[in-house]
Image 1: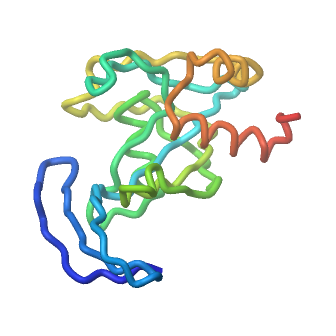
Image 2: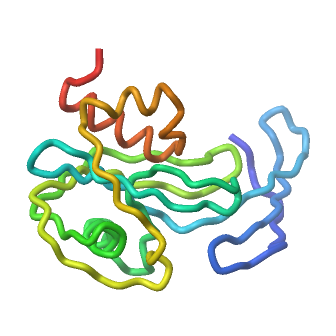
Length: 177
């Protein structure tokens, strides 16, 4: 394991912070590590009564493109990830889940970032909209679960968190070969 010798905060923004750590490697050499600090997040696979997955299409400035993704968002300080799932689904797709099951979790960028995503499947969806300031340009897209693998293979779903959570759900449902 590497041992931290020092740390220096170089940026503190709304969504992320960046620090540079000086570390000693197991072989005794000293090096630096850039670390992007980001709050934990949730990602949900909302499945309706006819086995459609409700995805969101939204513009992502860093990649200058519209992406097809699962609903996701940051866990607020002191918020339970399960409560965050309900809030995010209400804000992004206009539904509240009647049942939420954990799928597991994963680090999104462990080579240089701290963000951990809790993934869930959400069922028994009931209309219930929460208005959030940054969700007015989100388009909800219903995709049959059976078509998800093809969209991943074709690159139409190219967001890592969505791919991971969708494959976790499909593996649990025994829908992967």
